[in-house]
Image 1 (tube, rainbow, N blue to C red):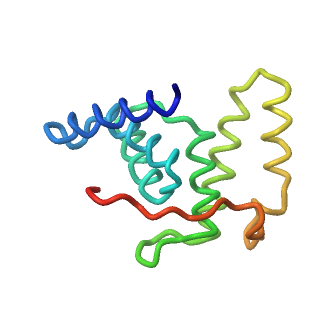
Image 2 (tube, helix red, strand yellow):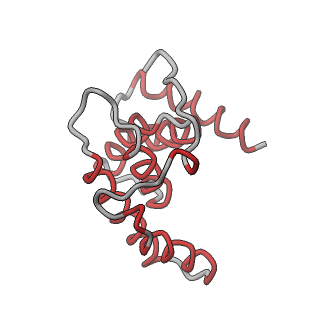
Length: 138
């Protein structure tokens, strides 16, 4: 059900972006779809554009995208490993400020204290999912 929902939202978002290329809710929906697909550079780009347009973007989703991206930066682009880790920490910290659930707060606190989120931190290949190829038609 979740897969069908995200696919439907992505399809609607793509259609809407053809007419309104910078519509923040559509940018956010497509960012979530790319994050779900593991295309973290596109997810980050679209989520940041949506946020700049005033859309509320999940800091947990965006933080996870930056964190995953830190291990597999695209060949072209201005993002750096340490920059991605800093962005992930910023997003997870922002999420922590708004959570009331004790288990979610504990999880984010552990993440923020982890050496993996420090500059130069190593996560190791065993903790990272396989990289997926971006679909065509960006």
